Image 1: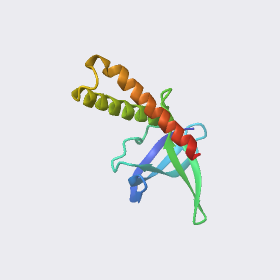
Image 2: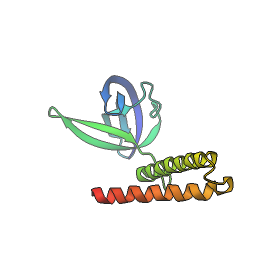
Image 3: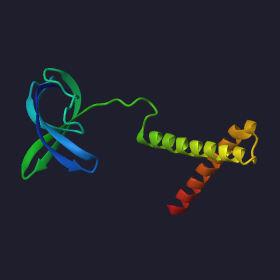
Length: 143
């Protein structure tokens, strides 16, 4: 839904599982219906820059209930680039970790005269692929 931000003000902070979170009271109007609502927005920053008064944004709105009171939680809609799922980022992180370990190990083999310098890239790839296979096998065993 598209909304226009009428006002935004700092409410409080609290310790969450991802660190200190900051709560903002937001008054906004649905641009298609003109209905004005109040909601909350959570930010990791005490100086949130996501919403500005008078600007329009695409948001998601969740209706919540607390102590028999209804309130709304809003979040900006953020488009993720293709291939940027959390799984994709985690996989790339694991691959980077394995490849850097493999290169470091090959460097140690070169220093110990157990590997020729021109073989480091091929050996690093073999080591990294083997580590990925081992992790997959361990994951399959645990499921």
